[in-house]
Length: 172
Image 1 (tube, one colour):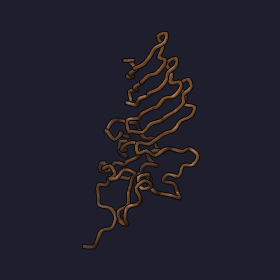
Image 2 (cartoon, rainbow, N blue to C red):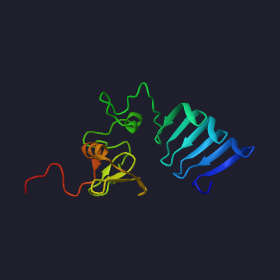
Image 3 (tube, one colour):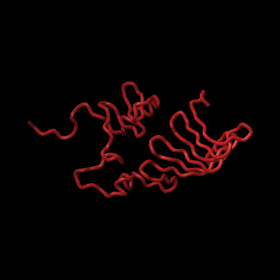
Image 4 (cartoon, helix red, strand yellow):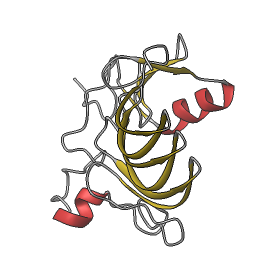
């Protein structure tokens, strides 16, 4: 698997990846679970580099049912998702640990929030440079180029690393 950048540690049956295994993808995502005929099959978990994970039952490489857990322990619920919605704007850490005193608002689920490079945006999976339209992960590795729709969404909704003073300025 040297040519794909992946690494397989596990059992083989008739020369095929089959049985209990650990499969490391080039993205550093790691699958630990059962394989059949070279595909995820049975119970297995994907562990992502950011600390999140996806526990699932797989059938011929496809997830049949599963649960996604964010790095902070928040479980994604497809049907009853109430995290940071219009009715409850609290972050998961605020739900777990309570709200901060007035005047000390929490800007992200991470406290303190990441420092954003000047002129860039924090788009959730990395930092976005609106001039080059490149999104890099938090380790400064290329993720993707933003199309017009993603560019518009990021510049309209995401936190920016400002190069100038913003907010209230007292008269001098």
